Amino acid sequence: MMRYNKDIHHRRSIRLKGFDYAQAGAYFVTICSWDRECILGNIVDGQVHLNQHGEIVKSEWLKTGDIRSSILLDEFIIMPNHIHGILVINNSRGTLRRAPMYERFGNPVSNSLSTIVRLFKSTTTKQMNALRSTQGRPVWQRNYYEHIIRDDEELNRIREYIMNNPLQWDEDENNPVNVTRHR
Image (cartoon, rainbow, N blue to C red):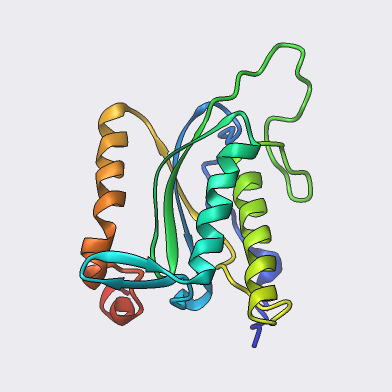
């Protein structure tokens, strides 16, 4: 059952104010499932085992890099109820480009981080809901976590975190078993 948020019109953006999320750079993204429901698979002996929903997510994540020439995919992992990934926007803006640099509600900027995530969430939601015959059911949490990666040292540290995430599932704050412990 979908929950109604009476404060929906009082949301604040969690993005870095004034930052152009369409500019070239590396971004660490985490997208969590609705209510942290483990709908993408499970972890057995430190290994991720994706179900049909997880395979949809994997396929669409990989397509993100295929259909957008300015996007390079780096390390990623699909966990039972979230995905971690590094997206690299390799976007050279010419001086003749007149597209807006900053997103405003209702005015998406092509190939910006939020547009990429929005389209990814939309297409995976449609496919997953079609598979389970639940049209209109939320699949993803409203927002997503992002972090601007500032240098190679940080990039390598985040890559390692992503690769080791299945081994840390028992302690992961996104593991529903740990929700009360981490809040």
